[in-house]
Image 1 (cartoon, rainbow, N blue to C red):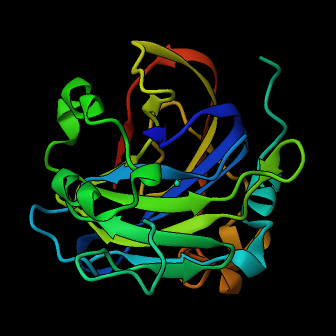
Image 2 (image 1 turned 180 degrees about the vertical axis):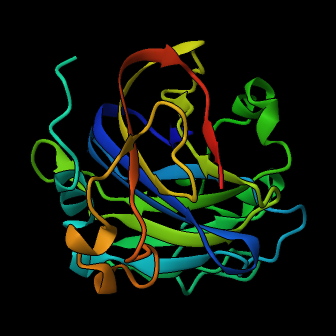
Length: 246
């Protein structure tokens, strides 16, 4: 779910990495370019167990490894052509706020908890009627500042979360822009993962992760001695999230 609380003029060059973590948890790293005329929030649904605690998600600062996806992409042959984040001093009954590099982030355990965010960073309530699959989901919310000039490429947003289904790696790819949920959407995505076996239709990196990335700088997110798999989605696709067996 590539979802924004306000109007965005451009969203492009989206990269998402997913891998399993300890105790059935999942790592997710997300990056994209965007252009907007106001501050807003990017909201990512995550399939957390029901009634997860407000500190169930661990946010990870990758500000010092902005080249995370640049390096990851270099490990593959060239592809064929084809945002409450409230102030910390606000009154009680707000969600915990975490500074993650250039972002401010919060975990929203359930849809009802969006009421604890500033209205500027919420979605219209009618959205949830259009997306019943997210009824039991939690949400990672990142506050984004409007670009000072043109498009802005943000450093990777990373976090670790408990999974309701420990067998599936989840990629939030459903598009919700300007309050609409089209049946099909234009994708400009590169998806990456590390799993025991290559998912059908995904490319495998020729070398291990430690031959193409600064694995220590990923803070445990990327496994050094494993290959990376990639799926490029550029064009119009069915508007839905992606999952692969972990």
